[in-house]
Amino acid sequence: MNQRILTGLLFALVVALFVVPGYWWPVVPLVLLILVVCLSRNELDRALTGRQLGLPPVLSRIGALLFLLPLLTLLPRVKDLVASIQLGQTWLGLFLLMIGQIAWAAIMALILLIQHGPQAMPRAVAAAVATTYLAFPFGTAVVILMTLEQGWLWLIVALVTPWLSDVLAYFTGYFLGRHKIVPQISPKKTVEGSLGGLVGGMLALSLALPLINGFTYASFFTLPVHWLAVIAGGIVLSAASQLGDWLASGIKRWCDVKDFGAYLPGHGGTLDRFDSVLFTLPFTLLLAIWGQIAG
Image 1: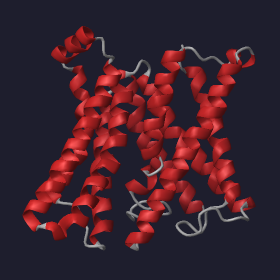
Image 2: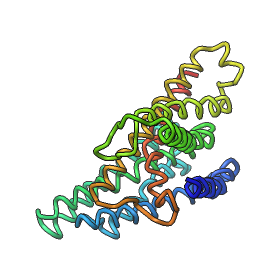
Image 3: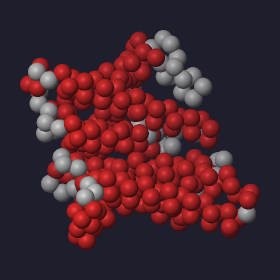
């Protein structure tokens, strides 16, 4: 356990060195996102190769980097278009991301089928799904960071909530866990740990939301809607985080690997640390949009 805790703290410090400067220079967290996507893509490829479903080297790398498509909304002419059609920059960025991902997944699958014939269908589907699995969530991180008011703070919410949820789930399960929740894909996960994770999600939002415009610590005592945001939002983000973790566990068991990587003792690789974040990023974007609309 000590090694796991030490590695987790060092990892959090490295992430903070990229994320904190984003308050002044959003390009710095973008560098972190590019590194994470590239490393995660390689780790996922190694896992799938054991099932003869390795990702096409060039096509999948291009597809993974399409998570940067929302940056197009920063171009002056695109901004003018946004103003003329009265479509928010956030919505346009999300639209570009979705269209780009769907189109590239189809193109990549078709290229593999044309090159190798119908027998390549399993690999074509795996490549399309795996690339989207990485690129779409991190694309929503770009939307959050570059188009939202206080996007930097929302990005921190998306990163911190699953990790705090994971910490509380781990220790709750370690000390109190008795009843297995998903033994088929993750034998160590327990109902008690999962409930502890939900508390962690609510705790993370209770600390983070007051830093965002429209939310204050004092308002928690006068505006029940803020408590509702903390409770509902915390449960949703923590549940999404746990679903992301379970899905990654299922992929690893199917590929017969313990971890996606091995350079983070006690934690695995990059994708092992960000598998939960993949699911919380899109839901954080929805929570932020809801906050702007409600505000």
